[in-house]
Length: 514
Ligand code: MCA
Ligand code: AMP
Image (cartoon, rainbow, N blue to C red; front, side, top):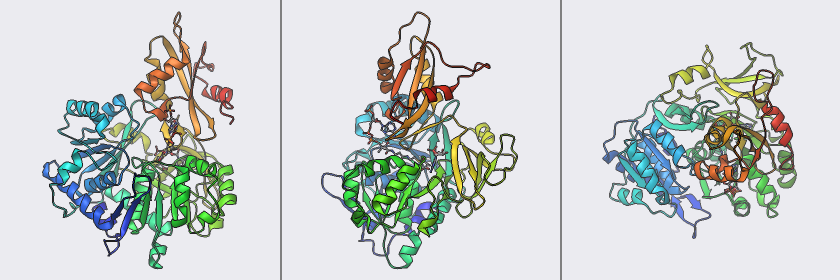
């Protein structure tokens, strides 16, 4: 079944009810369930009018808006494949994604139209539209001519629905291919596991405060699918603002965030226990939630954050229990979700007993179909018996709770965004006068972890850390830019000549008071 059809089955019978209310537009906007249905139908009809081959890629790099959500739904119902792109990505990054995915349609913001259109047309894309967060742009202008009824194109469970690019520890980003079946299976599991279904069956309604970006799994799939499948209203923030979010919690029942959002909310004096009185669920994920944050939240609001674990390649894998709340354990990501297999194995592939630390491997209905046009990479990431190697390191206790203790992949997670050192080092190493560089993650009170670079100059060259930072800001997404650059005489190496990143991490671990 087309994922859109399944989600639409969760819309309330009364389509005149409010589905989404914007919280940070100049004036609040109210979108009914009928608006979502008709708006996405018009956009789907626009896509259909382009006579594209089935499963064409539609790339979107647009600011968050309800119209962007409608575009996502339209791509699903038209039977195409959505390629959501972080708005922070710059030309070099976008050129790679477009060149690799070969989208038939690209939708971008007006301010980027010049370079995005040039990049897209060079890569053979025929259709480039604009969409801004004030309901303007050529996409909506064109869609206005189309009918507001549209029959979703049938989709088999194995048909592709989305490609999410995740960077690699070596080489370029890989496009994780998620199918209609992957996304629907996960949405249905979370619907039951997190009590969306129970609230609805009991005749109540959930209200989700949506304050995450919608170009990643957390904001796009976990949060939005949860709300749509249960016919729950969303209070919609185009940008996260702790004071604004705290002010809307009294009307809400569910909130989802990366740990940085919880840290920033805790710093907001307006966040009180009374304000959270109607809330039934706070979910955290995408990065480790510090036990201090978990406990501070409990004390301040009386609620226990439910931490869960997932990946772009797998959607959600494990979750602390919804009920009883007392079964949620800080510092763990909970047991495997129903239908998901999680195991821990040694470097050599030997199964490890409960409590022992090793590589986390997973299988289940939401595990992706492979990396876009990279069969070799796909094969490398799966075991001989078909389990996906997450690159995360952890243990499973005797009662099934999973604890993540580290990563075997060289990855920094900063404010919930992934930064792959190899990619950033590549950009730095290309700069004039640079011999080599190393990027490491160090603790940061707001972002959890941030990147810090050590750079070695070529003989005779003079380097300036500030100039390197300024040059990086011109080229790559802002969240990937290291927070500090140190010019050093050499990098620490072991006897084998390998850079000892652990020594660099140790050296800089207190830079931000960590
Ligand atoms: C912004 N900056 C960052 C980050 N965000 N630097 C490092 N890490 C970041 N995450 C930069 C800005 O460009 C700016 O740099 C400076 O830091 C301060 O920015 P600030 O105004 O504080 O940032 P913001 O615009 O308020 O954004 C912070 C944020 C945002 C709201 C925490 O990063 C965010 O929405 N993160 C959520 C990411 C997310 O949804 N992840 C889910 C991935 P300058 O001053 O130089 O301009 S899905 C996933 O991981 C899996 C599947 C899962 O399990 O969910
Ligand atoms: P992404 O590539 O953006 O899909 O990021 C997936 C990675 O985020 C996982 O492999 C983990 O390393 C990390 N992650 C997600 N949720 C958690 C969590 N609750 N605790 C620790 N790490 C997490």
